[in-house]
Image 1 (cartoon, rainbow, N blue to C red):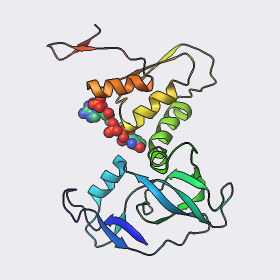
Image 2: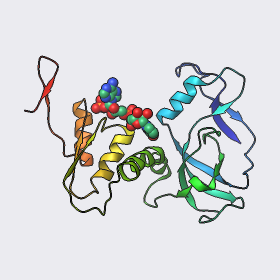
Image 3: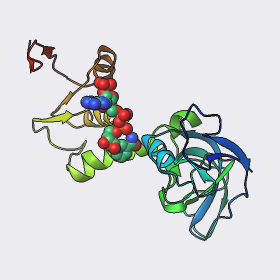
Amino acid sequence: MKSVGLFKSLPIEDPESLVERDISTPIPGDADLLVRVEAIAVNPADYRVRRRKADDGAFAVLGWDVAGELVATGSAGAGVSVGDAVSYAGDLPRPGGTSEFHAVNAAIVGHRPTLLTPAQAAALPLTALTAWEALFDRFGLSPDASSERRTLLIVGGAGGVGSIAIQLARLVPGLTVIATASRPLSRAWCERLGAHGRRYERIETGRSRLP
Ligand SMILES: NC(=O)c1ccc[n+]([C@@H]2O[C@H](COP(=O)([O-])OP(=O)(O)OC[C@H]3O[C@@H](n4cnc5c(N)ncnc54)[C@H](OP(=O)(O)O)[C@@H]3O)[C@@H](O)[C@H]2O)c1
């Protein structure tokens, strides 16, 4: 199958920094599913893995946020069937999904939202899981909570995680959502996503104050 990856870390401007190769189609293990890849998203994790790739001659495939169609299930196909549209944030120690086919543990795969294109669905998994786990698992917030008045500060609200966190946090009754953003464009994006915000004005000392 065709795959895009790298042999060693090179500046991204170098034509050899990412190269196409034919590699063996993965054979899914008992706990795996085999997915025909339709879209992958580039996450900061890809950048970090690419920068740290050892110059050991091995071909590494990036791309762990994946949307695709299920083409085979191992013995662990519970809840999904061949032909289903799926998406997932893959497993970093395993090869990424920038290939025609990808083997992935069934436990981390879900049906993808039907209203989203494959590219849109691939953009969501890792940032959305991170934001969801932070807000609902770690902070204990809930969309069903009573409307106790609380305030959440999201630093870097326009970022991948922040932009999802703003939207999820707005589902929590009684929660005021404040986001930081350094540029007019990122501030407008945070406000469009639902941040309540506060407009700060930079003064000569370099510190900020409320207008
Ligand atoms: N991306 C993921 O899937 C993921 C998963 C797990 C954990 N994380 C962690 O979550 C954090 C955010 O990641 P992200 O992917 O959402 O980041 P990101 O998309 O790169 O966004 C970072 C945001 O932070 C602001 N920012 C950038 N440089 C800054 C600086 N020097 N000082 C202050 N603000 C700065 C920018 O805001 P302005 O545009 O307003 O300048 C930008 O919108 C990181 O610590 C990352 O390791 C990310």
